[in-house]
Image 1: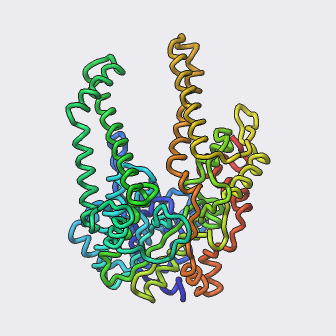
Image 2: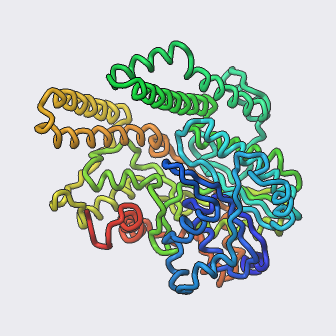
Image 3: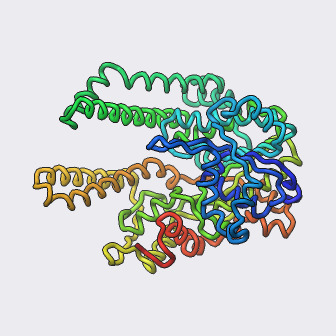
Length: 534
């Protein structure tokens, strides 16, 4: 087996190339597999708040190629880096929510004739988005990309999913395809006594209808009258100002309704959140539509900062653990309702990248469809208690600072979810009361104190959000089978095992958190210089 030989001369199409996983994937290919013929990056144009539009090519040049993911390549190629990179990379403007990916017929056909490896990294990764955004960005996008890939000439298709697509059932999770949707629907009806749509297409149509109904409801006479009344109370101003406030209230109501409806639907179906349920539907799309397409479904667990490449601790933005680690280091997270003895399955992003590249070669050879878990829990388990202890030791040694003084970090007791929620609710009530009381004082005297309290309110709101979304993953054990992933690694030559490392037994967790991950958060997310603790 040789990854290098497989990719030589190949034409690739990658979605999600500007996102957290896509960036190091593109960097790794350019670094370790420079003999690829071409990498097409499907990028959506973007319009900012001022109305200025950035084309796919502009986003490639101004967002992706300026990323620090390319620092080592930039050093290697010097001033010629961008010219060299653009000989290999080509932006194609598109949109995964469009049935034809946003391409005209000529480009659609041309790319199908050229593309030999299609890696679908893109997806809406928010745990609790408006559910129809996730439906289009995950499930329906998967339908559109697999239909495209099926029309390519003997292509290999890799779909990046999530290990948590298994739903809310704890315990052992096999490295296999899920049951077809029809089997799932029958089992759900037998288990709960509640009938649900019997086919995948009926489930999708039902979700689209639910979205349309909620979007129509926002303009109901009752809602419009309430928004108007609230706007008049808040604005006390011109008609124009009141109208603008009504539109803000409508948008806020609509987003909240779509978020809540998505969570409610996903949990009724047996998933913890909207994201993982939509990823389940996306896998169903791939299974149902692939035909004879050589396919791999790659399921990473919780992706965090890199172990080694493009540099130790590389991190594009806040992932799952970062808000909790930063909140703890800044003294804003006095406790957490986790089970300290559960396995929290974390995987460095460079291991996921390397596993994707190995899976592509294996899939071309094996044909058919295969599932690969890229996870650590069964081979090299990380217990939640271990994360806390490593993080606590780090911040005792290198405390964050506030007004130049070190911030003390607490020892967690791991309260129950109910107890923790009660404490947060109590803190929020006190903060709200204080803000209300300050509103009666002279503006100048209250200004600074009010700003501090508003920051406290927003911090508590953020904690309540993280608890609602992440608590199921910090109180439930999932054990992801990884034998297929291990066999992929073992089939590589010793040279390629070093070059494309995803042997999770090599990760030393305490060293990873203290020497790589937390310094990476400081450098890439908080933008602090090495050694700074602001």
